[in-house]
Amino acid sequence: MSRGKIILGLCGWLLACFAAAAMGGLFMPGEWYASLQKPAWNPPGWIFGPVWTALYTMMAVAAWLVWRQGGWKKQRRPLLVFLTQLALNALWTPLFFGLHWPGLAFAEILLLWLAIAATIAAFRPVSRPAMLLLVPYLAWVSFAAVLNFTLWRLNP
Amino acid sequence: MSRGKIILGLCGWLLACFAAAAMGGLFMPGEWYASLQKPAWNPPGWIFGPVWTALYTMMAVAAWLVWRQGGWKKQRRPLLVFLTQLALNALWTPLFFGLHWPGLAFAEILLLWLAIAATIAAFRPVSRPAMLLLVPYLAWVSFAAVLNFTLWRLNP
Image (tube, rainbow over all chains, first blue to last red; front, side, top):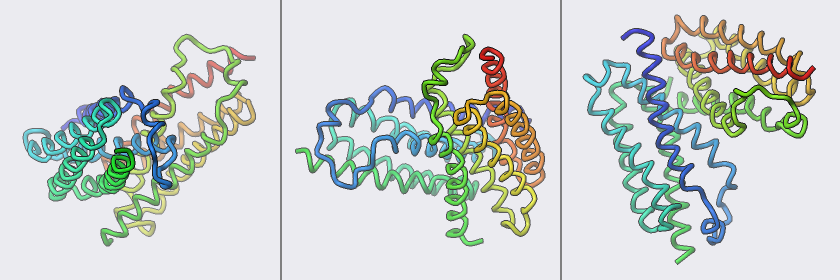
């Protein structure tokens, strides 16, 4: 691949991931979220923006590192697994913050967790660093799932 | 290197880069910045947070990819060049937003630009992806330098 194509590829993967991130911008926590009972360990709101921006960036870099190894032709399967987890990621915000449906969002985040684990497994043989870049993401989604579950149970 | 050490290394590089980013949090644009004459193409304020978070993350991943190739022992020189640009990066915010000194900040951002170019050159033989991850950063700092210069000239 030419260097120009590889840089364009990085931009493309960043765009794809930040398109998913933009969902978070469309469904912002509003009055409903403010009114929820929250656990003492609920992180302050300003944490989520920088953490997610860093995670989406690492996700994009991971996909790009895999894509570099022969493009779509050779890496079709791991990249489709990646796009599946990205779609599930983008879906969570409308379920939670759009529909105000924490129970359904929790079921969905469990699917997301499995899809991230599957992506990690699919990236592993292609690029070690790509696999490792998804570990903080899986850790944060594990925490987010516990938080989602707690918010659901605290607000019946 | 063990996988545990490599993941710890990723966390370490992210911490180092976000420590530099934290400078931006200490010296926020306030009344002084709001009162400056700005060019028509000055980006809206909300752009800077997500863009810088993405750039710091790619920076950290780039340093981590180089560090993985034998650690400090083998990659001492490129990593020191990297840390130099990171220090220059952290210094810009206090000069501009702390001291309100756009002329000095402009001189400093030219040094930063050179240090980033030197980092790209130093990373190139060690890791192609690491080098490429710094290209968006160099592009943004080029733009930031032009913006810094314009703000300086518009506000004598």
